[in-house]
Image 1 (cartoon, rainbow, N blue to C red):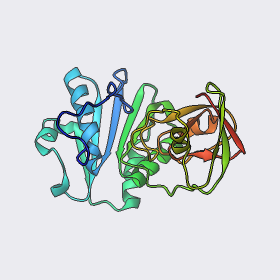
Image 2: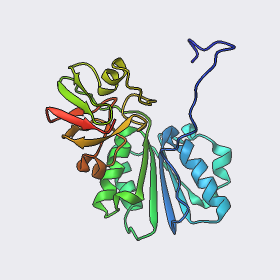
Image 3: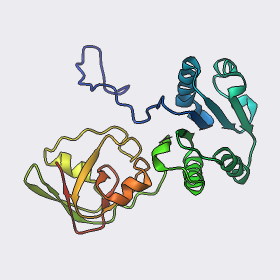
Image 4: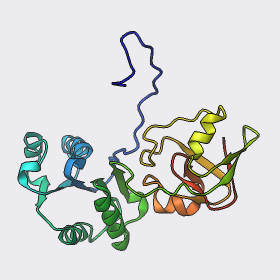
Length: 236
């Protein structure tokens, strides 16, 4: 937008989308923030604070000087727990302690660097948290994307079969052939370009879908994921 939008241009926009919504029916909510991942979690914590609902906000940072929004955080009192200057192993031990003792009607929200999110999700699963109670948002997809495969994509509603060559994404091929599909980050982190899989086996390379969603094979992020089978049939 900085490079191309000029005064007087007409922009087509969508309604706001929320890929990281806050539930308000939990008996206890645990927030785990790493670095600037505090941004959405602070707003969530303030919402629960104003509603008088139970929560605790855990903020991991390299040092106290790097804590963001200090004045707003101070208003949370003892609901805020800071965890400073921890090694990766020590941080994982602390997260394991925070997530021990899962009970029904508890929810956890995690936002921060990718390795921290990966570790927290794994620990939550080990501690018996169901996927439906674990909510997360990545800054970006830092995983290496393998675009070396070739396969076909059949579009069930468009009656069109397309070849996806090595080096191109499903999303790129769709657009080259006049199939419009919404997208945003185009790196497998936001879920905007997700499509329903009717047949075939995807290779998931995103950080948006949960492990259960990936195992079901019914969704694919067209910007980064590919096909393990020779052919995918999508509901497009």
